[in-house]
Image (cartoon, rainbow, N blue to C red):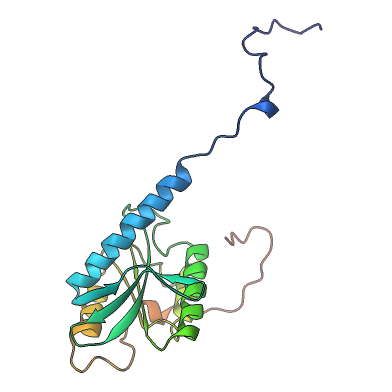
Length: 193
């Protein structure tokens, strides 16, 4: 075979298609970061006045990250979504993350009378698509708070877990007041993820 230029013998050993499949460590690192955050969220709940009655649990096929009891006796299902890292797409800042968490919350809400609390590392911007999706979950989730920079959220969770009697109505919060807009048309260039 004639070559345009000389190919070293080492480079010609294995065709690209025959290289072994290797997996990136990205997924493993993401799973580890998620597990670390879930533990951080449980500790955050304890600081707010809750007791973790159970860690991982399932409602049929839908996993939850904990069963929480407040000092006031109120019980909640805990969902935790986030990362220990501070990134522009951390926590509930991604549309797909809010949609996945929201589906889980809706399906769990259908299977239990216990209210759902969500702890995240970062809340979405209220006017963002992720913020609007989160706001649409107001009837399925009692409250959402972030472990990063959300003192108001921490105070609301403390009220849910310690106030006697426990609040029976949802507490006012930014995530509930998402900015609603006209329906969007999806197509090329919308950036829908």
